[in-house]
Structures are given as structure tokens and as C-alpha cells.
View 1: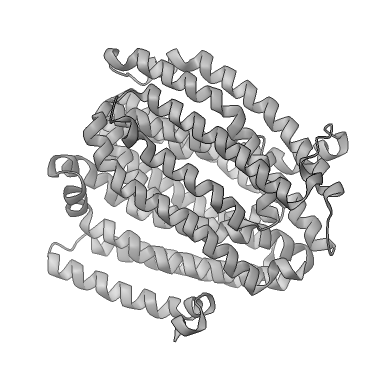
View 2: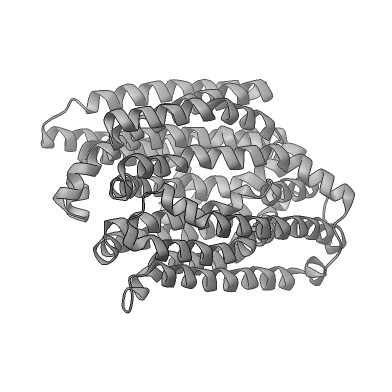
Length: 491
């Protein structure tokens, strides 16, 4: 559908996606120091685990949310229009499956809460509170799973305006809500209860938004066997990546907690959360391009290749400079943000993660392309091959080198992953070989430059290097910015 691939639609989607992503990041920057001071290091470490459980529970949805986006986007790419009578059964088939999975996940988390708290070496005084908080969160898991179907449909239709109007308040409540509960209690139970209420309201709002687009979309129908096979077939390999990928991304903090205690989790997770928030940039761009690539590859492969090349260039150049800031000034930034004692513990982690986050961002474009063209099987096989060696490496280096070793292991893993994603893209679609080669050369050059920057002791020289890198990045990115900015602003 040409309308969904038009510059006007993509610009609008980017603007809404940017607004919905940037404001929660700013809220987190303001909230984290206050939360550490109000909750204490151990409670804050637990809160980061709560955020991880809520934010990534939907990744264990058999890939149905993402699969729904791909299937609907492909249909829109092959035909001029798709009505409620065709899309409604697709969405409801996904909803029935996801509702059942959400209930199963809730029962599992509620039953496993005591063992989870014990494995994390939570201080005895916080253990009962932590068990109750995890069980309150379990009540919201069915809502999290159901929401992934509703948002999957809105994403395929490229209604990022409607998505943002609901996601933004939910994200702000998740980040800033704990500050409100501190006014009367530091208990994690109150925080979990607030997040549950916010999630219920968000699910209702998504359903209402879809109903406003067409009454047939929310007219209940029984799950259909043929559509179940189609969605499960598309989402099966996504499920593997959705389970294994987050395990590799987030299990490291649980390993840190088991080996070094919850205080070390806070030292590790705080720079991780800040640098991880840089994923909002590929999230803004590739969140919009994911349905566009699926639609374009079905109807206009040349357009898909152009979108791929632009995305890869923008991401690798824009984030390299941002990550360089953390590599050069990690301890100074953390000391100013939180306190010098915290910064001494967390700065080595921030420096390793600065490199790893940039490397990982280079992998986002090939990862998104492979999923959008239905080759999630290749991604899943790579993740399965990486899982056990990576977890063994994390445990070894955490025990030997502390949290800096954890960060180094994560950085090495994402480097291997990025290289493999590039190789797979070239195999799947040979015309992208030129873009893959450019990515590989820039990846090598960027890593060499990062290594050289770690040898700089002078603050003045570090600042000069940062300014030079910023000028170069602006020069490369300006032609792309002119396409997105309004004409007057670009001039």
C-alpha cells in the first residue's frame, strides 16, 4: 500500500514515536537519583527487576504480537485495503492465545515468587515485601500479554499517534509513579499496585482506540485454526528470540545479584539503564520501519533496501558520538548525577557498556530487517547458539572481575551477535551486500577509535575529541535531518 510507505506517513509516525520515547527517558533521568535516595540501594535494585519483568513480560508471548504486525503489514502490502472482516479474526485469534499465555505466566510468577526472592539474596527484612510485590505484578501479566496483540495491530496500521497517546502516560506512571508512593511508603507493594492499575487503564485505552477505527476489530470471534497456524508459524521462531534474547540481555543482573548481592545490582543496572535508554533512538526509527519494511518487501523491494540503508547510516553515526560521551566522562557524569562513591563503583561498567551499546545498536537494523521479511528462524538459531556460552562467560567474569567483568562479557556477546546479523542479512538478500560492507567497515573503525580514546588522560583532549566527533557526526547526518525537518527549520 503506497500510502503506508509515503514520506508523509513515515514522518508523522517518527514524530509520534519520538515523543512517546523521549519523554519517558527524560523522566527516568530525573527520577533515578530520587528513587535511589528514597528507596535505598537494595530496594532500588529490586525495583529495576520489577521494571524488567513488566517491560519484557510480553516478549514471552510466542511471538504473536510481532507476528500479527508482520502478517497484517504483508496483507496491506499485497492489496489496496483490508477491512474489519479480514483483520478482526486475525486479531482475535492472537488475543485468545495471548490471554491464555498471560494467565499461565501469572500463575507461574505467583508460585515462583518466594524462590525468586531467595535466589536474589534479598535481605531478610525485605523478603516478605518483595514476594508480595512480585505476586501483585503477576496479576497484571495477562493484561501485558493481551496488550501486545492490540499494539501489534496498531503498529501494522502505522497508527503511532494512537499508540503514543496511551504508551506515554503508562511509561510516565511506571517511571515517576514510585516517587509518588514514597510520599507515604517506600514499600514495593504500593509501587507494584500502582503499576497494575496503570496497566489495566492502558489496556482499556488501547481497546477503545481500536474500536474507534472500526467496530469489526473488537467484535469477538472464536480463534480460527488456519489463522492460528499462520500466526504461530510466523511467531514460533520469534518466540525463541523473544525468550533467549531477553535472557541474555537481562539475566546478567540476576547473576550479579546471586553472586555479588543486590547492592551490586544497583551499581551495575544504573549505568545499564541509562545507556540502555539510548535504544530509544533505534526504537523510534525501527519501530516505524518494521511495518514499513514488511509492507515494502512484499510490494517494492527497492524501497525496502533504501529504507534499510538510511536507517543503518543514521543509527551508527548518531549513537557513536553519544556513547563516546559516556566512554570519556563516565565517572564525572555519574558523580554529578548521583554521588562520587556510587560513581567509583559504576564508572567501569558504564565505559564497557558505552562500547557495547553502540555495537548492539549497529545490529538493530539487520535484526529488524530479518524479522520483517519472515526470517526470524535465523535470528533464533544465532541466539540459541550464543545462550549457554554467554551465561557461562558472565558467571565466570562476574566472579573473577566483579561487575566490570559482567559488562565486558555483555559487550563481547553483542559484538559477536552484530557480526552474525550482518552475515545473515547478506545471505537472505544479496542486493544488501553493499550496506552490509559499509556497516562492517564502520564497526571496525568505531571500535578502534573507542580503544584509542581510553588512552586519553587529559580532560581538555577528551573534550576536543568529543567536539571533533560531534562535528563529523553532524556533517554525515545533516542530509538525513533535512528530509525529516519541516522545510523552514531545515533552512
